Length: 437
Ligand code: 5CA
Image (tube, rainbow, N blue to C red; front, top):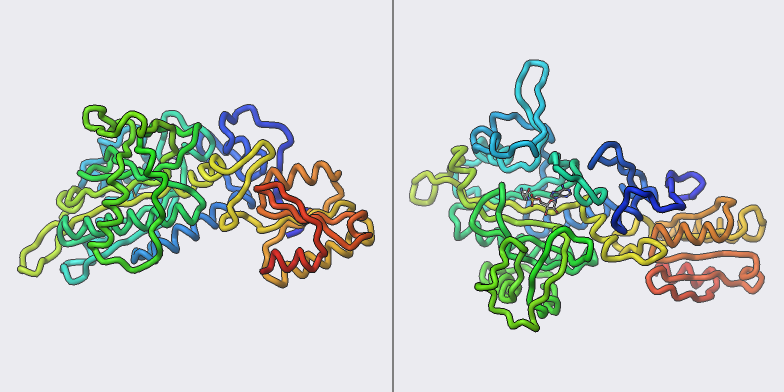
């Protein structure tokens, strides 16, 4: 992509409304634009990142055996009356009336909708286990939307819903998602901690929040220091016993969200207990028959008897993760994208656009990178060198290649690692090899 043809409305100054780094940097890099409180448009650079995160989340859900569907954003109020959540949800729910005066709502979550799909199609235990997920926009009329997309009113969530014959089996589904989450966050370059958590309006008896540590996080968290040394489980098929063993290992260290932290229960020695702030990037719930019982989602078991299906639900804050990743990976000059998430792999800077030698060398390397399948953003504009460097640092692509008249005389380009700042002089061919390798 040539920067001259791209739409990336960057800001030189810090926007006044941004209190935390990720919000400031997302606005400065032209990733999002506020439409109204807590509601954002995603501009090209921001959308690329959002899609990259979505892709990793989707791949890990598929590997864990979940099946992708897409449920609507608008749901009928009657479904929510069945579970008794229509009134309980209160002001956080955006309620809508259609032209026929039917009550509708913009979904804050999809337990009712997915239970309705289940009950109209699945009748026998033989069709279980089943896990359905979608990646869809949600709306919650938060009292205090803040920190940009971090606590938005409209936000993108991956939500999965598992269906099993009994609580013992749905606990296996829960464990499978728990392990899939550990892998998902690791691929996103994040160290996530699973915490014992409150179930809130979703309900149930068992729940974990996944948080990443950040001083600007909204939740206070308590954990045993050694939980940070645990290794992400490797890729493999796991039996229910093996899944349980991974979950047991991770939950053997004390880790609890603020509202669940009780000193009298916490047995961690004083020097081992750490208190920090964290960002909740996922939340999983085991709630058994809460919805299936209320909504008549029954299956016939092996004994011929009908029982309400046992369920869990599993959320990941996909749009919040964009901010979360920036909070954990930036410096004073801007964002530092992990390679898998970055909107482009490399930024190519032409230091003297209009100069024949520079244009030829840049155009040539640009074409070769594209042929090699390397995503490249080529700054071919006539901006000043200082401005070009600052912009590339701000948007945080993992690699930068700078081509200027002086280097070209000795046949070299400058090759820079954004994260470490280390610069090398390489021939254009070597730069290409390093990026395409
Ligand atoms: N139905 C369940 C799980 S599928 C559910 O709704 N869980 S939740 O309420 O915990 O939301 C799941 C995740 O969405 C949270 O962990 C968080 O990462 C993200 N999220 C929740 N509210 C917001 C918000 N206002 N803005 C951005 N992300 C949010």
